[in-house]
Length: 299
Image (cartoon, rainbow, N blue to C red; front, side):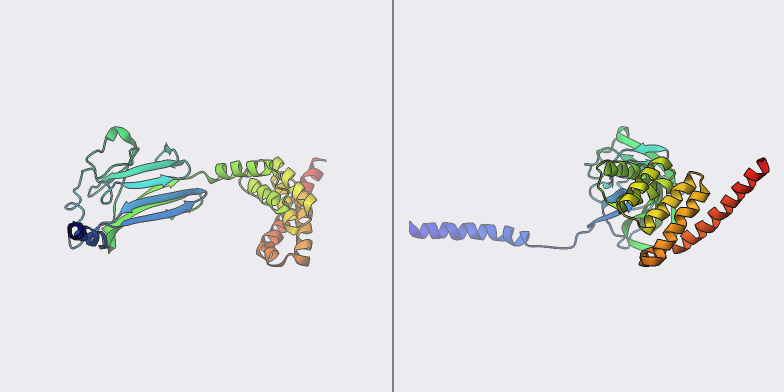
């Protein structure tokens, strides 16, 4: 009986050996997973995809047929994630995940954002689940891309492009974020919590005044900043606020205070703003002189 038990254990071990060996295999995938993450303004944009290779094949018009829905990658449909709402082609795209499909063509491509993200290939694709479609023109490249590649390219704080390159073709489409609205909401929340940090109040005030927000609120915050600490940056921000409130004389006075304190102990922080402060003093001085002349003429 003991020998039978040994025989049974050896038999099971032999049967499991091929499975153990196969589980240890770690080979390159034909279409490996890839991801790109880029923040544009305050919006994180992610693209998760599988990257097929040319391997000597003609890609567009052959491997990827023209005028047919394509998963825009390999394996599972390519996924795009927006951390905040964006605008694409005049369509508001809520934050969240979307499957990226496309219809390639020689002269134009149709880009599709579909709400059903758990799709393998295109067999389950339903146009009824499309959030948007837009047409873009493909670009012929001088360089060849052996593997499909996505990039998210920020143009500025508001505009970015999602770009696909494969073989000698580039396709891109723009999206628009709303960083000012998001930043204002963040600032209002932070300021309502009364952090008590002079620099936070000054930064919030400067953002408001340089992005066309309430100068009165900016004035309130910069005064709180200066109450907590007299610093050249606070006076410089207050000068900008006074300028926004059409008070160039007051702006000059505050900017001169900023210059005096900055030259005393502002260091590199001041040096990075010195040229702007000096130019602003000159401009506001001219505005003040102009206002005085207008008042004299009216009298």
